[in-house]
Image (cartoon, rainbow, N blue to C red; front, side, top):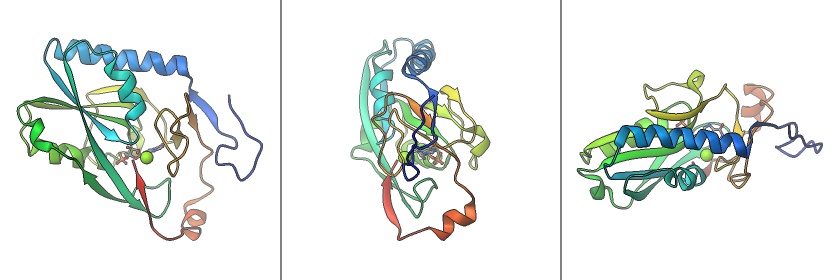
Length: 201
Ligand code: IMP
Ligand code: MG
């Protein structure tokens, strides 16, 4: 359990949801599922920046088939760091995905908005197959019909940081996953909204 006494610190009262040993087990578990599913087939891993960088770096070292890596940036313009905003997708070479076995890798499946949009955009380039892997899944938050083919852990409706996951760009470097204290209420949160800002997933 991690806690912090400073009131203004967003990590105050945060608790450890998954420590480094548990994370390693979860990543190995996802890696085994992917190895079993694809066998020897070459795989094109598309990491959703920035959140998936740590998970992807560990996951690809569990994979036994030939692997190519691509990235896509999904940024949301949002008024609040903990709430989803309008999604902007940037990907350099989608043509590379035609005819490939594509695995979209993200840190967390929350409302499903990001991965359903990315799935749609990539499907337009006619990959041989398209699957989704996530480290964390928050099924209780789902708003869009999308499910992870390979997933590490289901978690409750908590805002988490660390191991690639951020709050307003910070804490991605933490080696464990921390669950933050819930926001006081939606009314308080919208009252404190400031100018829109650009945040990367
Ligand atoms: P979705 O589009 O609502 O499924 O959200 C996906 C994106 O929101 C993820 O790729 C994350 O960047 C971000 N996100 C969702 N939940 C959390 C969280 O608990 N902590 C940090 N980022 C989150
Ligand atoms: Mg994010």
